[in-house]
Length: 83
Image (cartoon, rainbow, N blue to C red; front, top):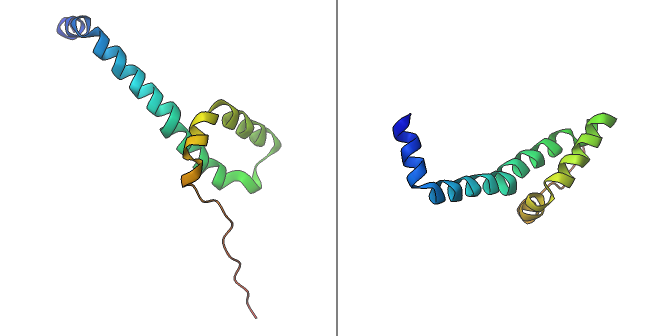
């Protein structure tokens, strides 16, 4: 443990930069991707509380959702017409 603390103390700027990079990646890519998949699964059959929570997530993670939006395709599937 002492070796780890000593290493982090010597390389503090690198550790801080890596921490910021990980947090930015999570905020801009990982969590918005999970939110988009969650919205796709639950959009048409969500309760009112769940829908309010969805709106909060979209508001809170808007920059990441905006970044991923051009790559997502949530158009409805074609209906199969049976005769």
